[in-house]
Image 1 (cartoon, one colour):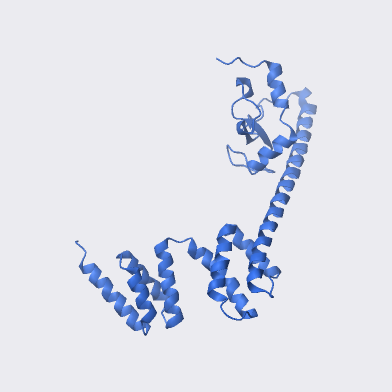
Image 2 (cartoon, one colour):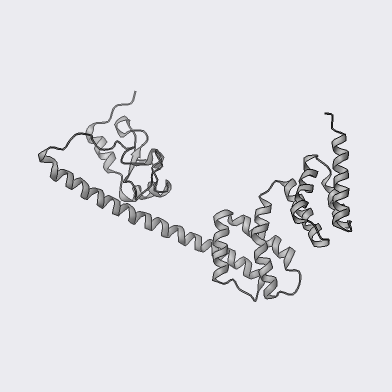
Length: 266
């Protein structure tokens, strides 16, 4: 059985949590209490030992976690006596100083995140400008890219840029064409997140849209019904490439679905 640390050893370990260590723990945990979820500056945060120091816990980062005042033990519920007014004021001042220090840490953390995000935006901008030269991405374009990065990983956006370029930039690049290309990027990123079968029916819808007039409100219901009955997507793709009009398409799809329904064993 491990020897219980002495009071001096406990004090030494606790005093070993430097401002730098606290900042790294707060930053790792997003300046949020890992027990209740409350965040600074609404609450005062502490660095808590998962394995208590009194039981041999140390200051290894894996043994440290962010906790708020309440979760870390809270204040005593004892009533203040006449001699504790100064102590109460001292504690209030200490709380204010602690909150200010935490705010400074949060500002430093957020500035670091902003710098990182700016670097990522620059990577995406460079990739796009390589595709649309001599045109460039303006401030509004950078704002759009920033919104994309809240939804998609940078790798997803870079892949979407390549696919959009292959699809849209097949002729001499004009200002209008760059706009279509730019708007197409997040659409591709969104599509690539869908299941493969759903990606296929969106591809088929694109074929139909580029070839014939289609009823935008109804086409997806026909395509999803095709999926529901597990019909051949290759057959549907080939038909979409040759069908002369919307009426012929919906009649043919409806007939194939009826046949599939009749073949069901129930």
